[in-house]
Length: 236
Image (tube, rainbow, N blue to C red):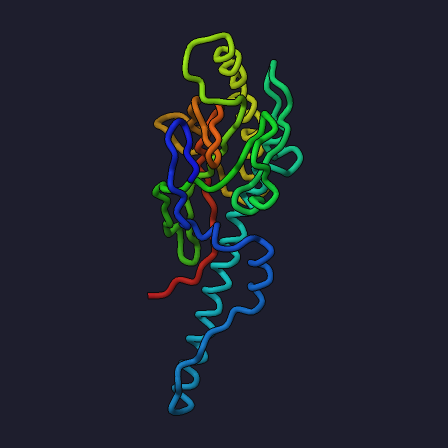
């Protein structure tokens, strides 16, 4: 169970991104195969071979897409000059750590050293898969960036609560500074953010209680739209 902004969410095994780690995708991408249907003659064999080639092409395309999606999440966090770990907020300590979930779950501590960020695909959110042109699709999904800034819960107005709330100040701008400078995530996305009327919205965020497992923190949750292009075989 993991919640955000004061409400725990049931993390469903959604998202093909969670199906495999990048290494597993790489291992399997070269061994994708299908079972051919029985053929009664040369013509049938040709049809079956064509069907097999089509299925292999589509399977390989799927694996490549999955790798691109998780690579986009990894780049959000780690790549120098791109990664959110380079973000610096005025008046705040440097980020102590950052993780990509679920890839790095095994290395994540039970209690975070603060401040820490966790980047993942936003679950229980409606995504879309659109056709841009023949052979070219657009995948629109959302990344979730959670900043864990102080221990919670904050249950009353006090000096400690005020000090904890101050620890989220200036982080929204700090993350925006990094993201505006590389809106393609190093070439892994077509663009991040989304059109919002006459302006372009980079992300939406909320400050409040955030959860990891059973622990409660005070921090910030960001929803970042990501749009990626994928070459895909398309037939009637």
